[in-house]
Amino acid sequence: MQTAAHSTDARGSDADAVAGAGVDVAILGGGLAGLTLAMQLVQRDPGLRIAIIERRRHPVVEAAFKVGESVVEIGAHYFSHVLGLREHLDAQQIRKYGFRFFFSEGRQDIDRCSEVGVSRALPTPSWQIDRGRFENFLGERVRSLGIAFLDGAVVLGIDLAETCSSDARHRVSYECDGVATHIEARWLVDASGRSGLLKRKLGLAQPNDHDANAVWWRVQGIVDPNDWSDDPQWRGRCDPPDRWRSTNHMCGPGYWFWLIPLASGSHSLGIVCDARLHPLETMNSHAKAMDWLRAHQPKVAACIEAPAHTLQDFLFLRNFSYGCKQVFSRERWALTGEAGLFLDPFYSPGSDFIGIGNTYICELIKKDRAGEDFAPLAAIYQQLYFSFYENTLTLYQDQYPMFGSDAVMPLKVIWDYTFYWALLAPLFFADRLADLGMLARLRGEFATASALNVAMQPLLRDWAARAGDAPEAPRPMLDQVHIDWFHELNRALRDDSDDAALMQRLRGNVLLMKQLARELSGCARAGFPAIETGGIDAMSADAPQRAPMLPPHWYPAASGDQAMPPLTPIT
Ligand SMILES: Cc1cc2nc3c(=O)[nH]c(=O)nc-3n(C[C@H](O)[C@H](O)[C@H](O)COP(=O)(O)OP(=O)(O)OC[C@H]3O[C@@H](n4cnc5c(N)ncnc54)[C@H](O)[C@@H]3O)c2cc1C
Image (cartoon, rainbow, N blue to C red):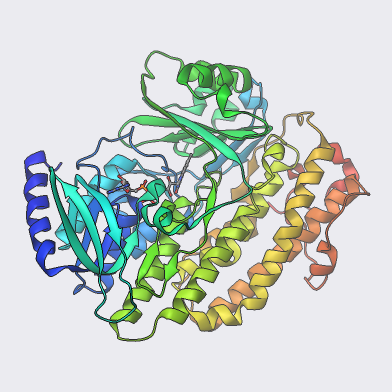
């Protein structure tokens, strides 16, 4: 691990190097978004001179550091393949055992609650990230790449260049070790997270209509869900029996609770709720959060109260979700990570949006370096980035009331994942997210997928409300591994396809979405004939008929037998 003395020396020589000559890119904030952007930029263009100004001094603490520890497929691919950090992830972080959801409001008998997850890991990997450990590693890595990483340095002010002319420079003043200084940069990227330095200066904040709060804390030791039952059959559902490596979601009406293991030997725990249903004031201290947990998730509360699980920190955040009016500018500035926008942690999209935003910023800087006009591209990439944000927001907005529905929420998880793996994820994996020709040819597929999703979300919400709160009778594990097409969607993310094969695969994925939409809406209507299906039937009419997409036990018993798909299950 880096010593403080080494850090000070490195900082001093970095500061001297950039003070006089200026840099091509100044990055404000060296957290996850800023450090990874710097790496990606220099990997693509080793000649770029980059400075990162980071308030915190490195090395930072492990475990009780920042929130944002569970990574899903796009973010995982960004770190492992785009940045080439697979070795660190495998050796120093925890390989994730997928998502796992228990519908366990008020329950002690978790082994009799519906469980959605995988019994074996799906082929495309993801990881649980100890953020302190990761940012220390990234800090050292960027230095080894010749990037000036000024830790312990606080940005005091920004003067944006007044023109777009080629010799215009932005100026950033900062303070380090009590000395105020400044640097000049052709490009400025705000990666300052929730400080939102540039966003505040330019008045770019844009609230959204998703009002949710979160509280979280870390405890020493690993919390193993397998300890919640003595039933050997339940414990043996997974091979290996490693539920603890999953991001475990304990779900109830209006909220979910996360358990994420950290490689440094701690466990991250957090409650996320719809502000209207669970006010922050009922959980904004550790004592209150534990009271809340005893009422809503008594089994988990009892488990983490064990003396071995010493409390390491406690934090909370009100109204964490927000948009942004602009993230890329022709005036050579950009916003990345939480300095721009943030959705919701339910499916862990934070690192995905860092990977996507950083990739677009790299493209813009590359074009500018080549002496080309990048302004039209900035506008298009921003439009795309906002459309991904808006589409993803629909998965969360107004949906928290149904989070406790063990009847319908498992179906929503499958739907939401299918939406994610159908277009956005494969395009990112195939490095085509900036390929405007490919995106133009896929415009129809994007429009269809988006329209289906916009119709599906209220249908799921309404279905859950009609199905009511009565818990399902115990049923077999809702195992994603045994849904053949779902497994294949995950596996195919890593396929190396030429343009024609990729187009064909993505068109096939949209057909899958249509088939699933038709099946879900048919089942909802069979249980509740008056339910509004929002035009899904018309939108999915041209999809070929196929055997049921989901085995019968995935469907709510409360809908009656007629709601079950009529054909044999796919296992
Ligand atoms: C409750 C919750 C749960 C989440 N869970 C997940 C998850 O499971 N998975 C996931 O992928 N994402 C998750 N996220 C999102 C994740 O936390 C963010 O995507 C990620 O931390 C953003 O990284 P960043 O680099 O933009 O911001 P940060 O990591 O906050 O980095 C910003 C940096 O800027 C520095 N800085 C600020 N002001 C100044 C200044 N004036 N001068 C110099 N430096 C400055 C800070 O010190 C900091 O290091 C979650 C978010 C929330 C709110």
